[in-house]
Amino acid sequence: MALDAALRELAGAYGPGMRVAIKLGDAVMQALRPPGEPTRATAIYRICEQGLLNVAIHGHATECSIQGWFNSDSEFVLEINDNGVGLPPKPVEPGMGFSVISAWVESLDGGWSLEPATVGMTLTATKASRGLLNGGNWETTR
Image 1 (cartoon, helix red, strand yellow):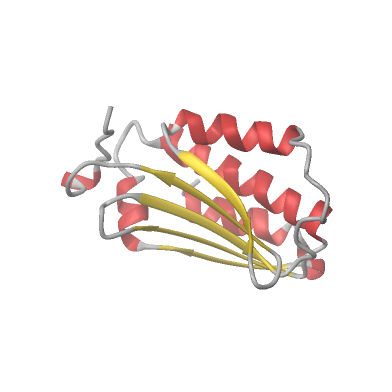
Image 2 (cartoon, rainbow, N blue to C red):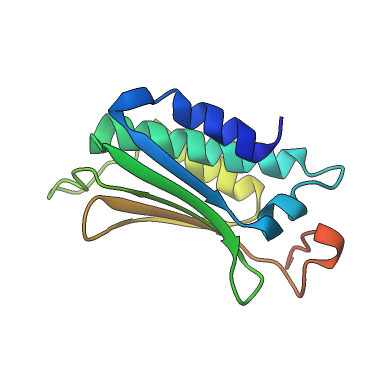
């Protein structure tokens, strides 16, 4: 199953309680089509899966968006935004959700952050790439 279809199915599981909008750029979908890319697609799916779970359980959000694109530096950016309650005033102890997200982001040789937004939270995961996406292939900067 293609990543966009899998994400739409996942979003549908949150039903009427939380509306999830998904927007993946054409370049992202092209980059995930070549043979050997299912691992990257799986990692992106798992990051979104855990992000949505955290948004629903901890953020009590009613709306969430998932966006993926390549920025002007050819860096892949995955952003999950919600309209939930945000972080509590006391420091947050990283739990299983943080560990799962970290493991999948590391499998992409990327980084991630969770920041308060005007409303809710924004989870941003990035994966550096070098140069243009030749033939849809990602080139790591190792």
